Length: 458
Image 1: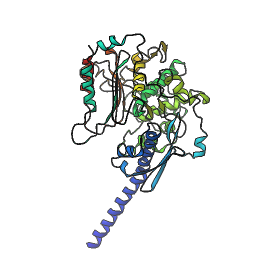
Image 2: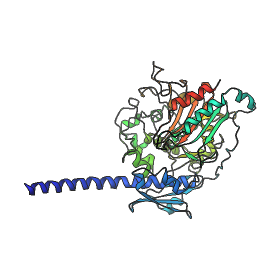
Image 3: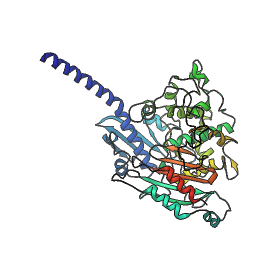
Image 4: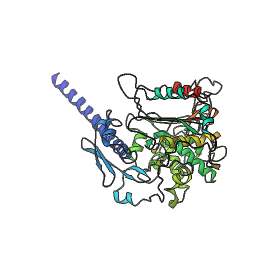
């Protein structure tokens, strides 16, 4: 009996050890890759210290297991977990930080570099509104009520100080009417957009539609899909998260999403290989893979020599988003799902572009009808809350009271990113509201925050 029990315990121990080993083998590269990439962007794009990033972005388990070495000579950060799973990210001016997956430094440095690097010029405090007098703008708002709303955004209720709002900008009728930053941040600090990058991918797709190079209703031009049921997936399906691919968007463990972002050289190519699970346009499933498939398609539409400058030349420069950086993967494709940085003011300019129906300073940047297409609810979303790479406050069809923000007009739509990144656009109130944070608890009541600002507009 004792011998049998001992053998059983040995077997159980061996199985548990195997499970733990396999999990660590899969998870450690994600931990070290996440840390190296985010520390590299934080130091060299945002101008923050390694100590501050370690104490905030990388403080929670399992990210706290990582150790990092910063090399200022080549603008790189190398991360590891218990000395294992080393991952290196390198910063390049104009392109931000890239995690070196399956590529040598020598080959990495051979990749094209931007011909023109934009420099931040967002220090101006009055923009968009042309000749509208400032007194007219401010006469329409209750300044004290807006400031009270900002107080709530920056408040830290409870013992844990983990709401961590870093920036808020409120734009009314084309002018900044309120703005605030946390200690250590200011109007020139580039901050991550995370999944707000998907909304940038929406804009880049729209620009190519305007150029006649893409048709959202046409099947996605992907050679690997032409011999199976995936050939029916349209660009619109990908933008509305209804492509039907078998995808796992889970950031709490190794998954399709985390493997793509922190292990793959070519993220779009990785997502393209995912098989179909449902027929297109039948099931809604939020997928960063779909966004990077779109990034792959965008790259194929642009001449090689123009691609590295495409976001800056066709979007950022034209809208004055001079601080904006869209970061590429190790294969050189911009990560349209997750990797973008800009100042809070420049994120506000991006929202203003959509409030202006895709027009900036009289020039049409996005095609006519694009914002309407963007804000039309996907038929597959059960509550009508998703359009084309933007979220919607429209509510369920036939039930407009069922909304994400009941106290906010139904025409509100927004870009949404991990840890509290948001650009809210409310056309009926001529409002664009940006909030950037590192929120891990004590979540801001966004409905009340937005409602209070809306009510402050007379």
